[in-house]
Image: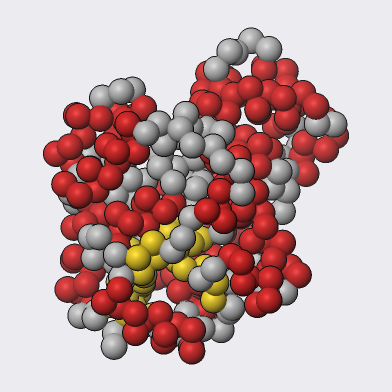
Length: 390
């Protein structure tokens, strides 16, 4: 058995994802594929278009053998925390031997060199990074400039860390280095396709028919059914909730929420009265240093009450698997270095107090996720959803 690991959001699953999965299987000669997937919230600081169970089903019906959930603490976090936690989950399965991720450059050697450099962070690099951040640059821009200016000329191609998937790729590689993992990394150059953002926007604008050609037929059918049932979610629907939290939280405590750095909360408060929409408010608060994605994560963390980012997942929660890959599930339970959760009702017997606290936060944030959509909004929704088995 050779198990491939993929890290994804599938928000929603489209033809580019299918192409990547198929190419990754061929490249690694994998017999099975395990996907670590974001739950109901994403790295861009938004609720996923459709819930994690539907997206897990999309993945399983298009080639994945098992889908594991990336807890909300990390799924809705910066690239470093997102990647580190996802790689740790793959490593903790005791099964995955290869990781394949998409990148704009496709240059694995360059990304490995950058990961090695950034894993050490020399004093000169740290000093230059601080200087550039103090000038108002975003973290991503400052980090790339600091890396280029404090390393020998020609070591890294310019622009390597200016693209989102290259950045994630380097963070995956850093995590493998930190773990001293045996997992072998691979990368595939991303091919042109309709971006997931455009697909999401079309759906939320009531133009779901326009995206049919960009999705596998079965994934499109599942998404269309969710649209009809009112089971799609948007960040904008949290506008009143965010304003309530912003106005009732002690201003001195706003900075305690993840990514809501000192001063940013006050900036939101000053501008909150002049904007009726959440997206409009975020656009007004946005600066060169505070990107829209960073601000969306800060907004989401306040809404969800996330004020700490932990070191990594404390359990492996399986969202779904294929019946013809049941052997993989048995292997996981025998080899995993973290507790494996298949049924929430049995979780408390398996988990430490800290791990149970993390899982309870997941259950709580799923109920908050439901408020961002028009359809079913049941409380304790997590307990009503069984494993996805196809």
